[in-house]
Length: 363
Image (tube, rainbow, N blue to C red):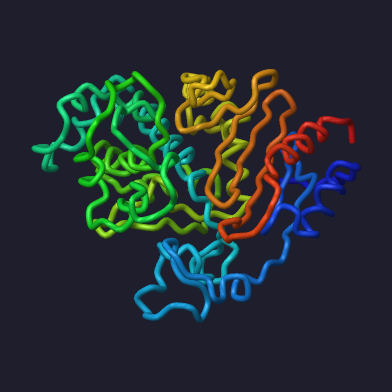
C-alpha cells in the first residue's frame, strides 16, 4: 500500500498518551485511508520485563514458570508466545480471529461448499458423541452461530477469568468441539445473544467438514494467498483443529488487508474473493441491545457494530486488538496491544475512533 503523511493534533495527542503509558501496553497503531498508509508506528514494550514474576490462571511469565511444560501456546503471560509469536512481528489477534474465521465461512458459502446459513450446525458434527447434547441444539443454524445466538449456556463474559469460566475450561480440555457440544442450553436458538468463544470454535469443525480442508489450508488457498498474506501462525487444539475463537497471529499490515477487502466489497486485484452480499450481511446489525440495557451496540456475523449514528465495523480481541473499518470515510484502523496484566489503563477504543474519524479531513 502507498504511504502518505498524516499529521494532526488528534493523532499526535494519541501517540503522546500511548508513549506515556496512559493506555497500558500498546504495540502498534496503523491507519489507512483510501488504500494509503497515513500512519504506522510501533511502540516498544519489553514483555520479558513486563511478564517476569507474573503467574496466574492465564499462565506464567518470563523466568516465572515452575515447569517447562507451562511454556506453551496457551500461556498468555509468556513472551515466547504472547503477544508476539516467538519473537516475530506476528501479533496475537485473540477474538479478532472470530471475524476472520467468519469471513472464511463466507468464502465457503460463495464457493458453494456451504449451501446457506439455514444449514443446521449439528449436520457438521455427526461424527461426535451427541448423546449429551441438548435437543434444542438440533434447531440451531449457522446463522445462529454467526450471530452468537446459539442458545448454549456460556459464562465467558459473566464470570471471573478463573477455572470456572467456560472459555478457560474449553482451552484446557482435550477436545474443544466435544466440550462445546455437550454444554447445556439455556434458551432456544435465536432467542438471545450470548458471547461465546465456544460457539466460534465450532467454525473450525464446520469448515473442515464442508471443504475437506482445515481452515488454515482453506484460508491459504482462498483468502491469505490472494491477499498476499504469506506469514501467519494459527494455534491448533489437541485434536488438530485451528483455534477459531482466538488463535490467529498476523502482522498489523496483513490484518489491515482484511479490512480493505471489506471496503472493496470483496474484490482484491480484480478477483471477487468474498461476495458483496456477504459483506453487507456480515456487517449488519442482526442483533441489537446486546446486554438488555437499551444500548445501541449491535452484532453481525462475528463482527461488532459499535455506536449508532455512524457505521462502524469492528473486530475486537482480548488485550486490545482492534480492526476497525469506517466505510463512509474509507478508513481502516488496526491497533495491537497486550493489556492483560494488572495495571491501570484507559480504554483506547473511543480515542482511536476519534482519530480515525479525524483522518477524514483533507490531507
